[in-house]
Length: 227
Image 1 (spheres, rainbow, N blue to C red):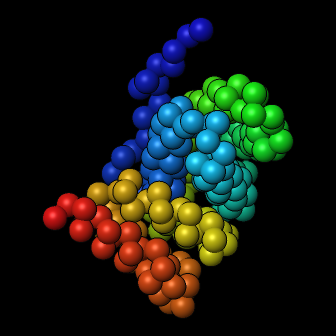
Image 2: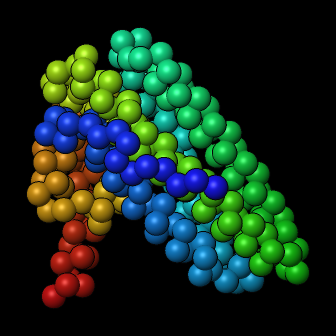
């Protein structure tokens, strides 16, 4: 096994990165999920069920994010180098195939006998770790090789519109899941920027609903815990 050269491809960090907020949330989600799966007692059916529900929601968000990226990227990929465009499309196909495998493992866990629950849980934990590692590499490829190509052919305004398209192609339920990852993943300044942009992206009605049902309760809870 060989490790990647970490600085092989470096995009212009002063330019707009349409993947930044989404990928930062997904990276946080992977880290938290991997920790949760690794420490779960799968013999405790109720607690394990809650953990698998969270896993299912994260997998659904991951699947939706890929679909939204495909819509947003489609017009620009034709202008990218053929090998970069082909690699991006193949990464998305492989990503969806891996999610389908995780779906199968979760279904197997739900019907596992009491004697097999811990074994099934360990399998999910190990396979999710492999999936998360591959997804972290995929996101890095998008934020280096792909983003470098996009920066050559698109303005920062066009890159921002691409990000807007990604958010617009997520359902209210998926945006709720995403915000629950973004809030603890972003700095205060980053969150302020995101919220100002998100209101324009999803519209005032949905934004107000997200603020009332998701953002404000979580921020209030975090403030109380810090006090």
